[in-house]
Amino acid sequence: MLCCRIFSVLMASLSISLLLMALSTDYWKVSFAPAGTSHSGLWQYCMNTGLAESQCFAVKDAFGYIIATRVFLVMASLVALALHFFLIATFMPSVCGILGKPLIASLTAFVA
Image (cartoon, rainbow, N blue to C red; front, side):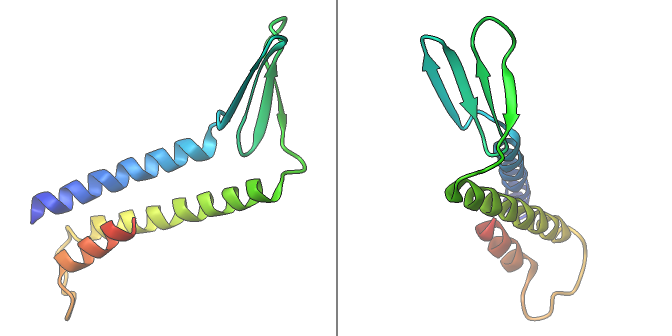
């Protein structure tokens, strides 16, 4: 059962790192055109005309789906981080009462 808990912690760590990468990157959409390329993410968009370095601008008036994606991605990152701490806490000796540590570890891994 220890190997399952270790695997759960490793997968939760991978999940958090991928969520944070998705939250911080600006390559959600990439466009290629004859005049240049552009890419955008949740927080900024960048344009490269080929003559100079790419210029990045903050997204000021975001569409509703972008705002919803931002909110849900931040909430998912916070929940995953909290559940990661709960998974790590299962390695510490404690009395869990009716629920055993393997059950708690399984539930938090499933939610993460």
